[in-house]
Image (tube, rainbow, N blue to C red):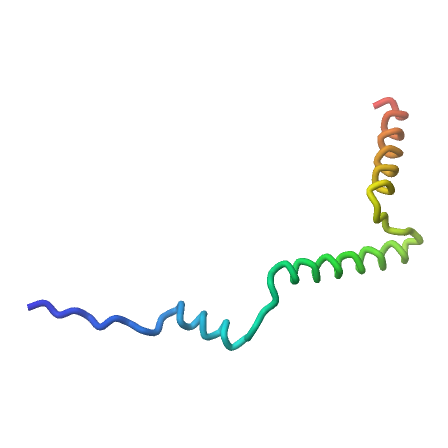
Length: 78
């Protein structure tokens, strides 16, 4: 006669779910992403200010820099 083992009811998944429930509600990943972007933006602004510069924010500002850099490279004969 064969004997079957009892089914385990507590495992690693249950442990993970309990830990997650213990932490409570966590904001959606998009909110975390936005928080990261705000942090990186503030850090970049601080670094630019310490260097006496202003961080570019608009596409026009970035395109102007790109065009100036490309003109400089072209002017060097590359």
